[in-house]
Length: 334
Ligand SMILES: NC(=O)c1ccc[n+]([C@@H]2O[C@H](COP(=O)([O-])OP(=O)(O)OC[C@H]3O[C@@H](n4cnc5c(N)ncnc54)[C@H](O)[C@@H]3O)[C@@H](O)[C@H]2O)c1
Image (cartoon, rainbow, N blue to C red):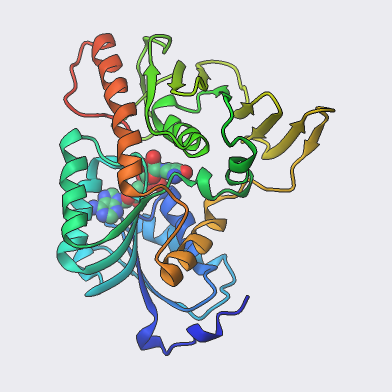
């Protein structure tokens, strides 16, 4: 589709700000490059090397519109008005970076990366700040905008499901939020209980420096009897596989090989699905277009996601403090 009505002159292009241009930030940037109408993109990261890699990755994409882009080390150089900001730093500085952005720019829409923040008090603080400044905010739990996972919603409507997630060292602390969010989305229910008693007692250092990671098994229970079993092996090389099972359907996604299958009653043959899994660089474009065009998108809202985050993070913090010598008063995860 060509957005002809968006053929505004460069002065009126939408201002999009990306804060944090690391692994995931640079993939968001590739997505922005694919947006079908022109953007003024500002990328902020205090580490030159991150900006350099992000620029290389941006240039790998053949743009479909004439974007302008500038790379900047200092958040004070954001434009006065921001139509959309994507905040893709680690969790430990997300609150301060969000505050800084709002201090320096009048912001309309924000996408925050998960995990949101490291302190319970940050969740309420930022909620109030967003509300006061009338900023629409979503959290990048992107299974809801991934065609394969999104299209399971009508299939599992009103069903009791069993949701299995297995793999080696995918990281329960970092990754569980995506799959709990997906369960909440499928079941339309944000009231669940988490049982951490089968997590491995050995706490690991995360591959991201300064953060912790957890393996083992976590169980999640929803009101309609649906259960999630997320099991992360510390050894071996098991692929990351999500399997969602009801009395009529089995949906399987191999996140490692990126194969997807559906098996349905009455024949139960495993059929490859035509709905793909997408990389971030193929999702940020459509989410951005939708937010700028309609003010809406299918990602979880800030308040939905804050609820899911806090339930998970509070349980993980309890588990951590009963199994480590050091006692934490924050969530050391990202
Ligand atoms: N939604 C997803 O699917 C997904 C996938 C991967 C990572 N993530 C999340 O995204 C976050 C970032 O992960 P990553 O792997 O990209 O980390 P990363 O370390 O590669 O990137 C973080 C970037 O933030 C920059 N940064 C540090 N201080 C900054 C500041 N004050 N202002 C602006 N930028 C600053 C760093 O220089 C770095 O480039 C983590 O919380 C992670 O859990 C989400």
